[in-house]
Length: 125
Image 1 (cartoon, helix red, strand yellow):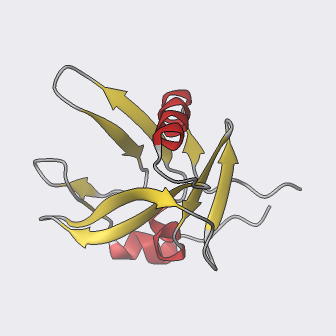
Image 2 (cartoon, one colour; image 1 turned 90 degrees about the vertical axis):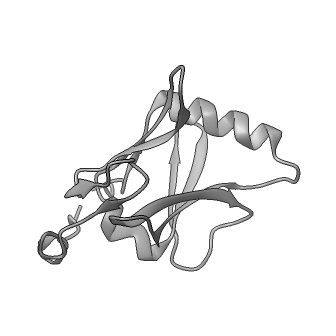
C-alpha cells in the first residue's frame, strides 16, 4: 500500500509556491514548513525557501511543487491542508489544521492540546 501523505496542498497554494520559486534569487528545491514558538497561543507556522531536504524532513511532492516539513513539526501537521488565500486586506498561506485546539485573537499563533497529540498515532499504510 502507498504511504498516506502527511499534508495536502491546495491548487491555489501550489500556484503560489510555483510563483515564489520562479522569483527566488537563487535556485531552490522548494519550501520548508516548520512550527516555531511564537505569539500568545504558543505556536506559529514558518514557511521559508529550502535548498534541499534536511535529514529527517518529510518531503511532499504534490501538484508539481515540493514542500519539506521539519521533523519537529510533523506531529502538529498530520492531516493539514496548506492553502493560499488572497483578499482585499490580506494574502498568504493558511493552514487548515485539524490538530489545532485554538488560535489567538489576531490569528498569528495556535495551540494544540498536548493530550490530543499524545493520542495521535501515524497511520500504517
